[in-house]
Amino acid sequence: MCGATQVEDLSLGGVDINKEAVIQGLVNRSDGEPAAGAYVRLLDSNGDFTAEVVTSASGAYRFHARPGDWNLRALASGGASGDATASADYGRVERVDITVQG
Image (tube, rainbow, N blue to C red):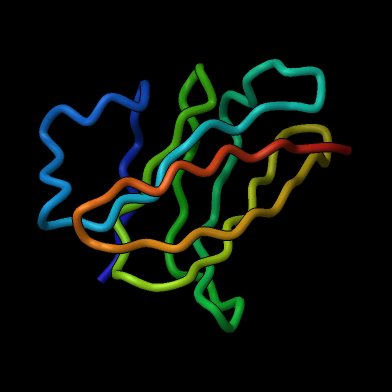
């Protein structure tokens, strides 16, 4: 099972990383500014949609995923987008920052 949590920042208060596989990071534009209100999609290894979350004002996002390999796609205003990959596992936080361009 996978889920998305809208977060304000990347602090881990209330997250038990020993029981959860966490993928989180920041989405920024190519000029370094946060991509607030961007959509980040969690896609499985086949590219199928699993979950989606909207970034905070600071560009932060977080997914609680099952262990395994994942694809991330960020979609921001103005047609900007960016892709990244992640590998989630229990007991650790996978930090993946995504730069959107376009």
